Length: 254
Image (cartoon, rainbow, N blue to C red; front, side, top):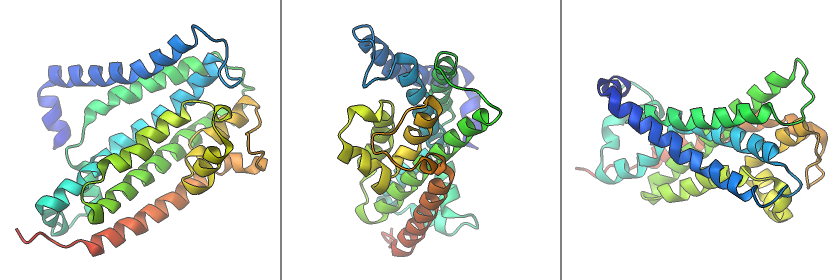
């Protein structure tokens, strides 16, 4: 329904998607301006930073396209409209994901995918038949991890009722963090996004393997391939949190 509504005004959709494209492009423009004054950042060249940027932004874009509407759970809890979702014969999470589905977010995905494509033509990667599969697994696992964080944020709003910015700190803030190499951050921060909130599995660990670099924590090599398993675990935790939040929900009575 929302896609049909969006495409009714196609010129408006094109302008909104273009605005999303340009807005996200400005983040990468800032990186290129920085590299006009330096040759490397934390030992990483511009194409290598572009690889991190492209994988992080594309994964978040996919998760945001499918589940970004979960940020509005708090407003539905406050005004009592969550009740209408609970009486329909469709899972509440599916309804939340479809609520005001914003097809314009394709602009962000397109921009980050173009940067990723450019980076892949510039970085020194040993291509093998498994490399495209590794890249696809990285993007899909990253999208699942970001999606799990979004759902966790939505579940938290059943209690907090107004915590969308807290969720954004871990999604948009986490994606910005992953656009830069882990070598420029303190090791305690790297440990936190590896073992506490496992955002490092979105792109840091698998990308370092693709680039032939060692991670700053000197972790076992098999962890570089643990993204799908970590994504599955994150989704399971997010699903449990969502069900717990639904059980704790109390209507406004309005």
